[in-house]
Amino acid sequence: MASKLKLINEWKNLQQNAHDYILAEPLNTDMIKWRAKITGPPDTPLEGGIFILDIIHSDRHPFVPPRYTMKTKMFHPNISSTGEIYISTFENDWSPSLMIRSILLSIFSILDNPVMDNTVNHEAARCFSENRTEYDSVVREYTLKYANASSVHNENEQDLPPTMLHTVINN
Image (cartoon, rainbow, N blue to C red; front, side):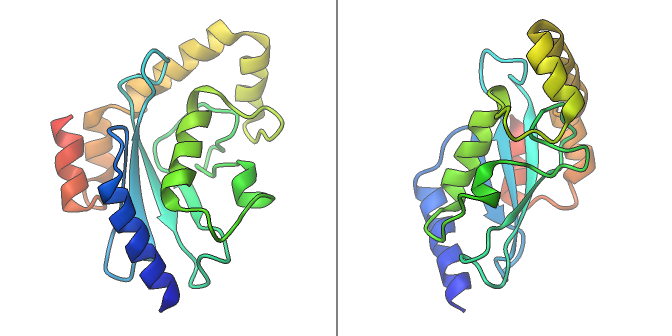
């Protein structure tokens, strides 16, 4: 019960302190499963992209980190082909005081600035390290193909909360 109350408070905090480029909300009343949307940072190969994440909280939240999965296909050193996101916050630096908002801001920050000491997609990491121009080109291709409004709408329409679906369609 305490974890549900904490998640309700986090949702209220997200609504009150919303960023234009990050949106997250629960998929149902149990507050365990959430869906988030991050828009690509401006002036990057990700600009204009809509990146959808699933967030699954443990029944032991906040003592166990939630699982964040990128639903939108990406070419990124810290995101696996199955969408698992690898940042130290989920592994070594987890703290029960961390909030969804701060985690989403961390994910937003690594989108164009990967953490190269914690890579999982080795092809993307190699490309980023050896040829940033090529890396940016591939990232832009993925963004245009997989992170556009029509692909997000088609793949996620049935799972998006109504308010988020409205936001995706109208952006």
